[in-house]
Image (cartoon, rainbow over all chains, first blue to last red; front, side, top):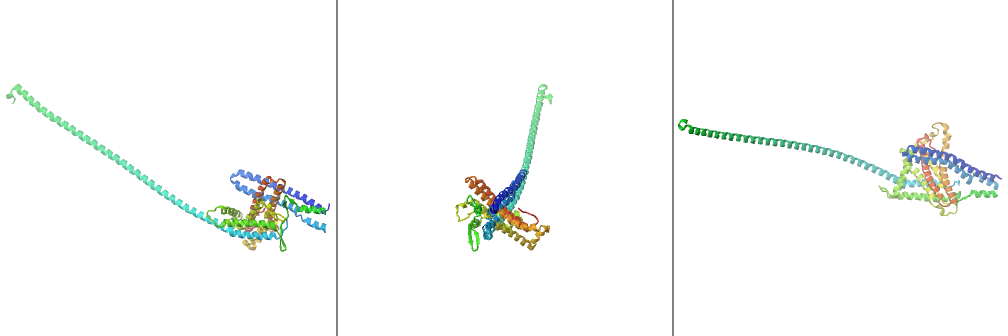
Length: 92
Length: 143
Length: 251
């Protein structure tokens, strides 16, 4: 295997790992946030509307962690900075 | 996918332009409309509250008047009842008095007639007794 | 060189007719421009301006129709700005935050609701303008400029004193924060929209009928939340710059 194949393989494997591992923590966090919000609503049903709104905004913020991982994955697959370098090197 | 080019500044300029245009045609006029409506509603509310308080004052006044009138009517009624009772008592007393006096008068008349009858009876008794004596003793002896 | 060809195939991978990384390039002088992004952004801008003009053309005291709708939107935006910036400061920032919200919201929903696929372009495809990293970075950089402007116009050069305020040792972190703020803002929006479109694209490729619908609904929901979050965070950053670096509100 030459360098290009190695980089391609590594990129794809790491991309899959990134999105896998990167989804775990936000998923746990969102679950915890949802559980807390549910118990809060159970305690104060009058505030349900407010709590729900804050919950969604907070969840989207937590989820951005997973989105960053997703962006990294996209960069690895579609815009890997090393490809061009090695393609030039292989061509030249 | 991650290639930056002239789209970025164009988009930024475009967005600023959009902000400017929307500020002119959306935010300013509608904010003004909202504020004006708020002011209008608040004004109306103050006005309505004033009117409500005025109406409440009037209601209180009228209630006061009604209470006064009721009291007055009550007193007039009581007065009238008392008057009626008085008149009733007076008339009754008068009637009783009249009856009494008439009865007394009648009794007096009866007494008088009785006396008169007694007197005439006595006279007759006298005359009869004299006649009896005359008859028994003779006319010369009696005198 | 066979491997090289394979890589270029991966690089321009076509996913359920959803071409990732393809652009409809225009040349203006020496600069290249992503044409499909600009076309959809012009449509979005046109829609917003038209709706605004229609709403504010004939303002009634008792609103109806489009005026009512736009007033609802304006009140929503004002509440958003008020809750972030406070009663005293929010008024001059309503246009900026509101336009951020409206532009992103209409872009996201336009990208999700309008069947752009029916319109053929020579290369690339029409999609939400927020689908392109240039747009989101432009918006995020404008947000950065806005909060710098807010801080500088409120406190002058004393604004930079806020960087060493609690303890000077945090200075590098605070400088770093000025870079991470636009980065996280732009990547969050970009990633969410692209993820949404990719997921819908993959599902359409696998099962073309009905199954992608719930995902599309979820996508609409996330798009709306993302617009809300972008505007909320912009408001929070501006508020932070106005108030000083006392409280940390970071996402």
